[in-house]
Image (tube, rainbow, N blue to C red):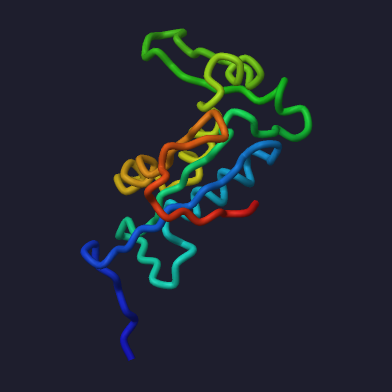
Length: 142
């Protein structure tokens, strides 16, 4: 008996919607990453991008548990000596409300070229309305 392996030609993609309002950031990111990778499908193949599209509504209204609002830091480096920049999560949410969600999902994806394709299927929307009316959507409960 052979294990079936899917090819990139046979991939069928569905669209999922997650409402992030008042839900923990990590739980939303974990569920979105699983769908983006395709691990929720029985024909999951690690070397093929067979994941689905994910639309996250109210992406800026997630919840951080504990004291993470004041203690979690986001780092980036300019490339020059002494160029490490640090931004606290509270300030980052005020400046770029969608960035923490994108960073959390991206951090849960594999660290390879497929992750760059997978993250493109993540659509973050600040409000509760989306423009994808002609696409059949499934809701993903967290």
